[in-house]
Amino acid sequence: MPTPPVSAHDVAGGCCAAGFRSHLCPVRVPRGRPRTYDPEIALQRATKSFWRAGYAATSLDDLSAATGMNRPSLYGAFGDKRGLYLAALRRYWELSHVAMEEALASDRTLREVLRRLYRKALAGYFGGKDGPRGCFAIGMATTEAVRDRKIRALLAVGIPEDR
Image (cartoon, rainbow, N blue to C red; front, side):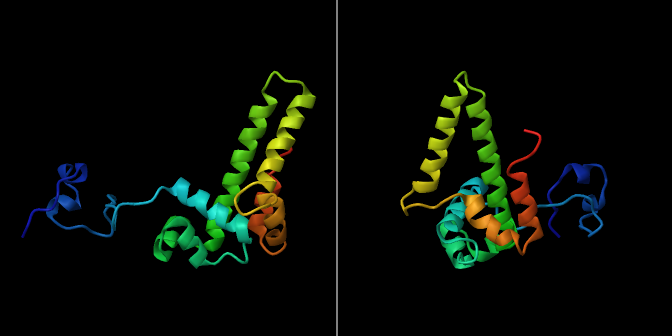
């Protein structure tokens, strides 16, 4: 019988040192192949896909094509379509908050800051290869929030009261 690989757990005399792995063993060995995708890039591409067609009209095949990931990999990384959309909406808010904080932290006058914010927002809403796309949150999340409590909660986080 071949000797299993040695780990810190083996050296400590755990179940692996005896040559077997139990479901009770606290040491977890990663399963499957290593990740061949960048989660951030996959999320960016999925966001573009949702933004282009809307949540309801974006299929898993669309998301698979956009991210370059097969369905099992999508499910493994993000759960289901809804989980991927929630991650995209969270990331959209994070980036929006960072952009807002950077704009407000400048030495410019309030008029200049607001003008810059509006220009940047409008460029995002009306720019892009596929034409105008509107606001990712308002254009899509408000529609989905009617039926989905988690999306409704994330939509509320978009403009926090403590900022």
